[in-house]
Image 1 (cartoon, rainbow, N blue to C red):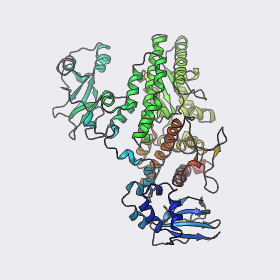
Image 2: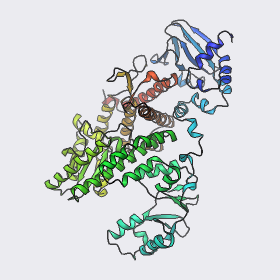
Image 3: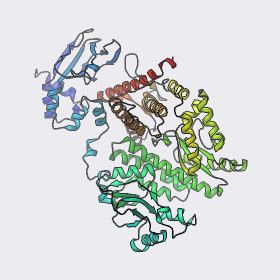
Image 4: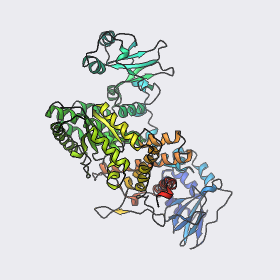
Length: 622
């Protein structure tokens, strides 16, 4: 290395994310090992088939071509390549040609890995595996090292050990007495003869399932207990307890040992008092809000809860589930306040949500997608009551920051406040004739989830929906054609194609460009195979477990989906910090070279996944 150019290389690497995180002495060592390559316009980069290299473009423009001659990518200043250009990865081999005079910095990969051996977080960001690189890009090392942080503590550290253990044959009355007098707790755990957990009952269960239904208190507790409750191991992290609470709205999670014997339980109160989890705390306060004015005041804390969880975890799924739980809590309490205002509902009903809200994938810019299912015998007067109820709730949600749906897919729209017979007719029509208008409606209500009211009423419609859409070739074909209308924004030269926002900034709509592209195709695979899951991550996992996706596709898809969701959440976090509009519009010009490369790699994976589904329906999609 010429000592005269070393300062220039060192200064340049200090501007490149990931390299800039290295200590100066280590970075200097890396810079000293750099080889400089100059390519003339039209010159092809010679590939050493015996060694692995990474490259950074200092100046110039290059193009990469696949073995069949098709363009893979076009790269310029500060871009990094070579991760897929490895001697043991012939499937990914591509040629690299300079479009104009180009200066490259070449790194011997094995030498580089040895130089940064002491920095595993940085090594992960430079790993040859895209899956590992994407995972590293959404993981803040400062978070993972904070072992004492509230989300990283063991559940056994926070659990309540004082509990009531009873048998399935004990009477309801004796269990209630033990909960009140002998122990003074709000739940009891029902155990088998081998001391393993078989059920749980809470004070609310006794109120709703015994007192309200006039059940004989001398009956065995097994008649009213919740069978096979969700559990958590004592050594599992608080993060997992939060995931269960937020996803399933659980108030008491039994903590078990490796023999599935109960050693304690954990509640939202434990998390609030011992670890200050803002999201759980907010949900608890929402449940006790006494007015819409009070709810509006609490809605201002939603961003704080979002900020806290973004600082505490690198899991986009947990962020989405937490925001969904907060949204659910606001909706649930608004319905209760509406019923207090309008009186007891005149007939059975189910308030349901759709879209990303139903999928537990809420973000800060999520709008409203909701509807009401009424009992089949609902009268015209009943519908009038629920129309007013829905307007009250939808307006209330809007005041809480959940914007009205521009397509009017809300319970406040009379079309989406109908009895069960009409809803079945909707799904039959949409599924039998999936034309444009029908497909638009079905795309919204293809995933639904119950929030409040008669769960049996909802379950009947949900089961009918599942029957209509599963193994429905014409519907799948229509969904494929619709999904392929939107492709990842890679232009003819494989560069990012950006749009302009209202302020003339060049932006990338990450929801449209990637998140929806993935969820749409994953949905099609799920529908084709009668998958019951509606959450995108759970669907991806199920498709792999059922051997519908191979391991490589599964890992690429899972990593890419988590990465693009992380980009959206991080963008919205920065918008809060900078007092800007919260939306889905990213500004790639602010990204570093690694992030630009990750985006392009992600879009290529999305495009490949779309092409797979296109091939399955190729003769029908022309």
